[in-house]
Length: 508
Image (cartoon, rainbow, N blue to C red; front, top):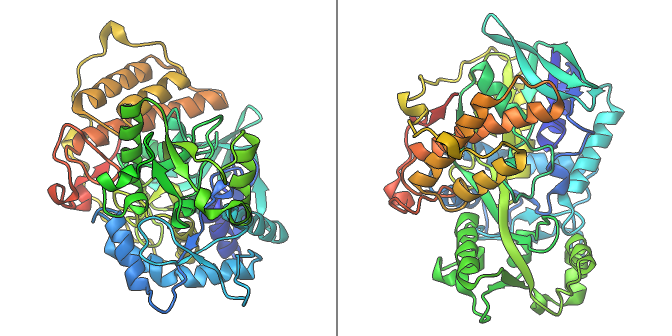
């Protein structure tokens, strides 16, 4: 079987290696160079190794709790059941996870985990270590790599995906295959402030939408609580708070306990909103205080963060550092079953581009790398299985909520203007009027845009499509749950019971 894997993060690389090892002819297509995506930037680790008082069942419960009850229990069970095997595989492929003096895997804890069950590599360089090891494994294998190729379209014949079109060196090229595995990552570049790399423009979700694939949960955008509020966006790992760092207001008070009894270790959406509210109230960023850990521990445990913070003029061993939230992870995406199948025969999706159901309304820390490894392997294993259609009814009639025409107030389009609009109106705190305003402007921009020809134009078209779908989904969900917070609506997961999957599907 000829297989195209589009994307070179942990999900795509895992899928490509497993497909090759199963005897398939594999071509790996990547927008930039292998490793340019989010995986290599991941400071957090991989959850899934359990101590004597821990278990897969407790990990599953923490995942469900972080997801505000909207996670798919079957998908969560797959994640935690197969996690240890995937971590062992990463070790076998050369990932040097950190170990104790006795040689055991060193386990860390992050927010919303009740136990230390997370493995790291190089302290805060886990993603880079995983990316390097998997890329090296791919290069040793007879896997064809097509680099600097932007995915622009799925080739669909008789209702089945038969390949892709890519833009490379200004020319459109068709690549044909028996199956396509999307592993293109998320859409963090929808927002003015994000931890995502420049290539995270939602390409895979956009082409899948245009081809008629179902997507869901696009309203659930996770904002990482702690980005260094000085210079370009740089993430301060949640593991820093897991080790004991605290968040302080301008009076030196640990304000996050006002929002949740777990304080700094509450779910990410809770901590992010608490930081945003406090920063707005005091007029400047809150501070992350890690001074209690000491210079030696900070340098050894978080060498990358230590280097960058000092490079930007902060001695975080002696003073708290300013932090702010930023768009980080998309819980929604292309709807899949437990083997990565989408609603389009021949098309699989894995990693952040996919909506497996694992994350629900809010991703638990250190489950993303795990999800990429687990479901990347499962998709490869399903390539030769008889195709099972993912059971998805038609989308709701209200998928494109009516909004007022934007009139003459529509600003001139630019990517920066779109990103700021999404940050202001479709960000951490949302209202009906703000969402409707954003949707009207996005639709006006879309209506006035021309057919894309260049890479930048294709990316902008993808961002506009994802912006419309995200704002539409956020308007449709009129209650607050998880990372989706409507300040003009009922606010709790209890007020927003999980709806059947069929009622939250989006197609545009």
